[in-house]
Amino acid sequence: MLIYLSTENLDAALPFVIELLENEMIYENRLADSATVGTSPLDEAERPADFAVVYPNAEAGARMG
Figure 1 (tube, one colour):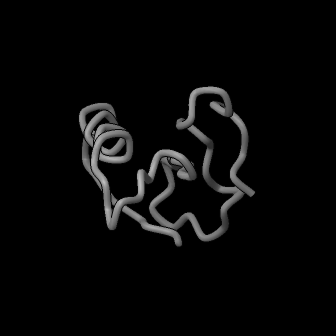
Figure 2 (spheres, rainbow, N blue to C red; figure 1 turned 120 degrees about the horizontal axis):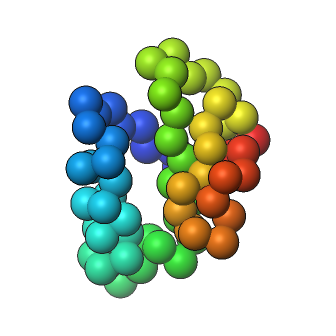
């Protein structure tokens, strides 16, 4: 599943996204166990390779695609 979000302030929004992944259960599933978060400065990012991983920290900087 891919979920795209847009924000005017990535630095402020990113901690909220990570907090949700790590602390909220959805149908008894912890999303952080299999989630990858990537960011892109492009408004028209079309491919996973357009995104750089920022979460989990162990993969930070890698390309998603």
